[in-house]
Amino acid sequence: MTIGDLSAMWEIVGDDETMYAWNGAWSEQENIDGLEKQICGYLENGFGRWAVVLKETGRVIGMCGPMWWDTDADRVLEIGYLFNRAFWHNGYAAEAAIACKRYTFDVLGYDEVFSLIRDNNYASMNVAIRNGMLVRGRYTKHYKGEDMPHYIFSVRK
Ligand SMILES: CC(C)(COP(=O)(O)OP(=O)(O)OC[C@H]1O[C@@H](n2cnc3c(N)ncnc32)[C@H](O)[C@@H]1OP(=O)(O)O)[C@@H](O)C(=O)NCCC(=O)NCCS
Image 1 (spheres, rainbow, N blue to C red):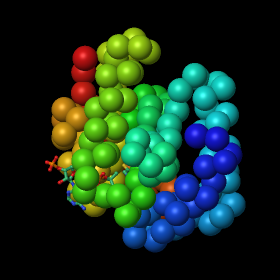
Image 2: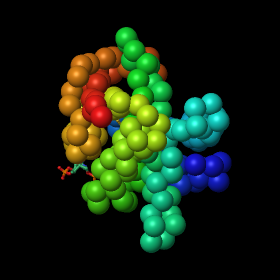
Image 3: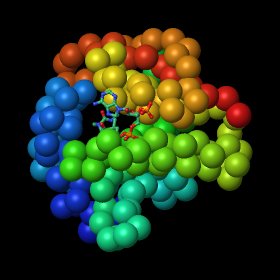
Image 4: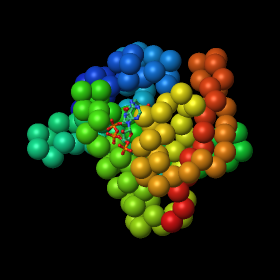
């Protein structure tokens, strides 16, 4: 992603329904901060959430990629995904997540990847299951003053 993807990202993170697992839409400032965090992450780690581009049109329809994330106990490499609601239910999230898992194993050389998923987010759990993941545990994410129970999914190489 580049800062030029701000409006494509805003279509996603500015939408209440898409962001239900975060209790609703982000503000425009949170969108800018989120994109900057990803771009800084690329420089720091060499990877992060990447733009998902529809090959037919070149349109940015989502983001997916590995990112370091702290649970209560560990720091894990997490594959996250977030898609424009207009493009859900086409298999894109599963396709992107599987490709990111392979990249993490085969190119980055890690032997386990995780997805951390809120306990009410069945769509995301189904993507993780499609990605070959199983539930390994639970943790509580502390976000905007709320405790949000999450499942720790992972798949090993
Ligand atoms: C989660 C999300 C990325 C799924 O995107 P998608 O492109 O529609 O997913 P896919 O089409 O690849 O579907 C993958 C699996 O999830 C299932 N699925 C998709 N949406 C679903 C829903 N709303 N409820 C239940 N299952 C769902 C599909 O049936 C499919 O399962 P199958 O392969 O067994 O048929 C999308 O809903 C999204 O962006 N949600 C908001 C952001 C989010 O919560 N991200 C995850 C944070 S942990």
